Amino acid sequence: MKKIVITAAIILAVIIVGIFYISGREEKKESLKVGIVLNGQVDDQSWSQSHYEGICRTVQELGLELVYEEAVPESEECVARMEAMIAEGCNIIICNSFNYGTYIQEAAEEHPEVHFFHASGVEEKENLSTYFGRMYQMRYLSGIVAGLQTETNQIGYVAAFPISEVNRGINAFTLGVHSVNPEAVVYVEWCNSWTDDKEAGEATRTLITNYDIDVLAMHTDSLRPLEIAEEEGIWSIGYNMDNSRRCDDFFLTAPVWNWENFYTPRIKEVQQGKFVGRNYWEGAESGMISLAPLTEHVKEGIAVIVEEKMQEISSGTFDVFYGPIYDRNGTLRIPAGESMSDEAMLNEFDWYVEGVKIHGEE
Image (cartoon, rainbow, N blue to C red; front, side, top):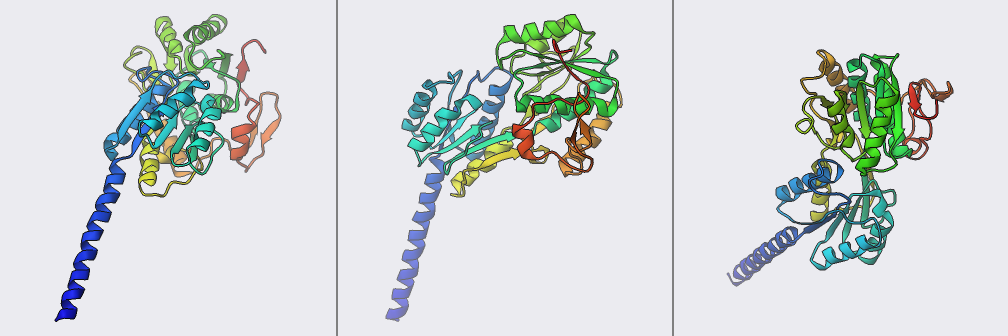
């Protein structure tokens, strides 16, 4: 009997220890605190707001705390902001701009106990993951909308910088246009800024003045192109968020971000001790990216075509950059039966497909 009593006591002790262990793990889980550094405002209805709303949904679902900093300069100052967040107890830090790269690397090196996430970054570490979405897939779909909506076959595209990310989007958009309307031309004007309203506005006016634009797309965080399109009675395709309520007379759709579909599973991995510093480049199948619902202004029949192609993209049966694809000089860039590699899409997109015209270069 004594043996049985001792064994029972041991079992009871193990159960009690287990309860405290599980309780401790739960306490640790609940103590996670997230800090996000934004290069814009939480209500900009664009890039920064998309991140803010996404992480808010995640922390609400997981029961975490959130600290955020708006309009943080892309300079050494952002290191001080991250340090302050860490001092406040944040053990997850998110930065939403490529230009924070040097500084988040510095912070990750200094704080190996903290988990870092860098949107559009290119260099990961053991405690730092970089991430972005294959937004070119949604650009292709929005190109289908533009190609079928236009009556003049002249489509405008306000773009921030001639870098691989932006060029990738221009090319995917134009391929979408040409898949339904080979006669249409996509005219591009650079505004050389992500956020400057004045530059984005001037680029938009340049396109409207020089061409018979009746559909306008954009790859910039400024909303000025959408506002001018509303003023001028031109159909518009936005970016980052669904701004159909803001621009309700001429807005058609937009490639948009659903960041909670990235943040939630990744932060759960942190909670579970399964975090691995790596690069993520996720497509339509992940839910990170999508196309805003087509508005009532979109011509009848377009929605069916877009939905069919969305299903092909999501299932992996259609690849946007699948050859043969020629550049605007007639040179074969992607041979028949081949797909463009991720490496080339990310780093070597310095050319444009047939149908793209850069303003001032014609």
